[in-house]
Length: 523
Image (cartoon, rainbow, N blue to C red; front, side, top):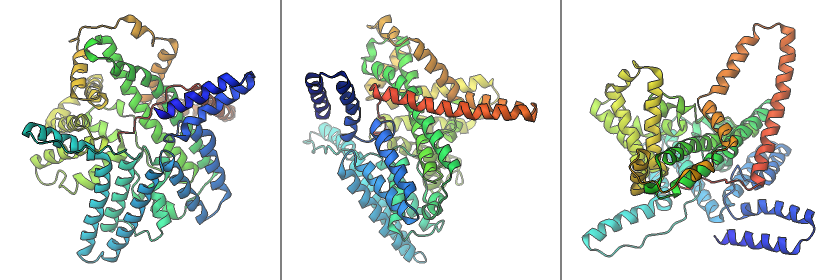
């Protein structure tokens, strides 16, 4: 709040003392960058796009060899420290801790002490995550029990959640476990390990990159014009998803979820949750696209994290397509070690529920997230009991409707502030309210821009554009070679114009201070 007041005060002074129109325009433009000096630097912020990223790219390509890793590590720590220097100190502590325990596990890999060091390393990582992410949640629940027992409440620590701690903690754990399993070699260069844990493209919103997938790239990687070009295009695609689509739906979702649900009409409630369904997908997948694109620019190959999950025909398929890096992490580091589906049917169902309980808890320190995860786990169990086989015998559109309905209903818990809010919102969805808001609250969002964005969102979320491009490519084989040359030349020109247009459009939205929320603070 203090930051906002400061910016407003500076803007007021500019307006009061600058009489030259050009000066006012110039100084107001500077104020677009000003908020970034006091908050977390986002990929979709002007300070990142027009200052930080160009400097890092130019510096990276001016350097050679090991200096590139050093420069990227320093840049990542600066990026992380933008919202508070203490964040970087915590990240550096994590790097040092995991470097030391990696060496200890490797030194004792042929005796039982390796397991002891692994356990200590895991406990230290989870303790750090627990203190900074879950201490307040644990204290709050203990105090509720104390209240019932008539015991005075314990102090509730108000600890600021470090951005990205869930992501880099899981990456650190994968390094220690892979090392213990002898699936990768120890990293004796602390700068390389530090770069793996702190690499800024995927630091705040994933994907979760496993050490053995990127170990060789930390030592040597190839940069090329093709990779750079692909990286820029992928980054701009993700930026457009975030700025043009996700942010547009965020305005509606945040507005309707801010209302008292008991006063919402059924239409408004459905508009709110559908808007959020699009927002979270295009926001999250957009950040993943930007991370993959930035990785390619610097020569890294970062794994895919989304594969059109809203095209799924079951909840099991949904989790093969949604946040792939997280679901595979839990599968390989928790579900399989617990026995997976190898012990018994009942144990399989138990393992699934435990995994999805922790999946919900990973997303945030709230019972809403936990129940959200358990709902998905419950339907995973139900589908394994035979529902999925029956489902696949039905009409395909019904399979999609079933999956989307479960996903959307679960998103209510993910977005609502608490259980009461969620329960009342469910009531609004199914007409159990007395609406206090009329057509005006709905009509203010109904405009040609929203209609266009909605059509694009629907097509893009089920890979409609990709299927159309594939169709065109297949039919090019039927055209003469001479004509194909002209078509390919036109395609290259249009592609370049398209991505330049995306950058200009996104920049216009950002400079106009379009609503640009960051939904990963709770992660």
